[in-house]
Length: 92
Image (spheres, one colour):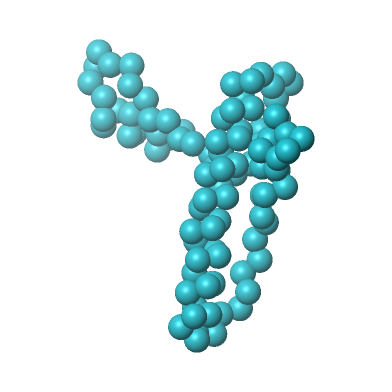
């Protein structure tokens, strides 16, 4: 809270309602009532997480293998099954 307040104070003028928004891309959130808007937000977050995982973990591992650099396998969760719930043939 302190950091966000400090950044907001440093980047806004007295008559502004500007805020800094942070996007948490790690998984679905659970509310008492989830509406379509929240589903869209969660879906976008999962797609961003998949892109991040691909760019960081898969690509680096493939590059290291190609260059013959020893690297222990990095374990990560693939969220493809979650995305298939929305994107798949029987999905939304």
